[in-house]
Length: 446
View 1 (cartoon, helix red, strand yellow):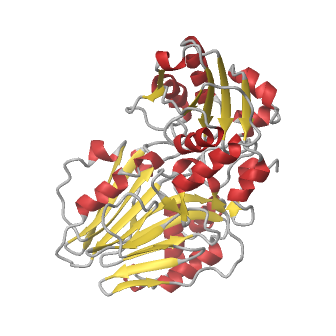
View 2: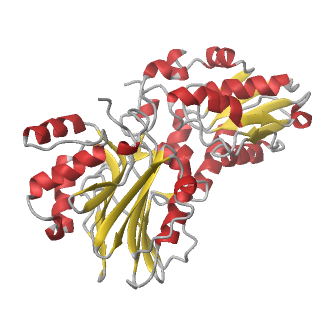
View 3: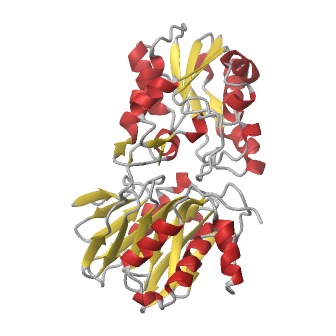
């Protein structure tokens, strides 16, 4: 069975007043993170001191639009699976023995843990690492989950899953646990408002005024219950491996992840990308949505007009997180060009990155068919030449355009039909994302 990898969203809400219903706020929160996954979704909530778990294939809006249940404590998930089947059994949250859990990330040695658990008599319903983690904790603690403590669960995760990159939520009948891996690969933020506590993959998706906000640190856990919230100590390790793609691509432009403002960092990357770039152009065109602020920074730095000449089909979600069989179709349907903005123009197109090159190739073709004189692509991340082991959909080097052409810009541009291509230099990229604190594995040869 293929192992699943995830770039998902998790959300939890706990009402300070047990009589308050938080379901609408939870569904609003997870819906605003639909950009992080669109394969399946789910919610677990407490009613009459029992956990009810509901999952579905597809989008939140298509499955929970008229959801009328009430609860003061619940968690939710939206899933993006890059390896493994898209089916209802793999949808999260995953419920087992009065605990419901959901997960954003990957465990590199989960098959090893699964084999050990099978020898101990455990059986498995899904292909997900979430099930492995939850059953591993049960096997270690050997007691009813009502008696689990935050510290002992945190200790198991930090000692046994050191090779994991994850954010993890657990729902009990009267409390919520949340954890982050010891290297802080994935973002997870705690927000306290006047009436609720939130735990979210991204902070921008709640409109409630925050009384305080805490980005969980390396190996840190948090418990929320009727008495408030309690944090464990962060990992003592000096090593962080925060995923740069969270800021460059995945996170919403209005978010702060890892205590970093996404919009500001993308603008800065665009400004650095513009340095020493002398290609003549009439307009700078962003690839929406993640490319916009980088294009804004580039346009401002070079004093070239920013033009919204590429239109997105809002009914097509992110092509990067489509499964492979649907990706080509989605790319073809997603973009259209406003002809009078590009005809007889020399164009610089700014985007966050190139992985397989399908999107860039399609956009270049469309621009030239609509009369563009020249098309020059500019990317505000370095060439992607290595696979990602930690949950981003980069599973095979043979799919990576920059790896295939050994990062030779002329050859890449020719393959894409562009007049030129330029990536931000790795040195400048590292001025924004220091390699000692951020994971750069996808930009490294080994």
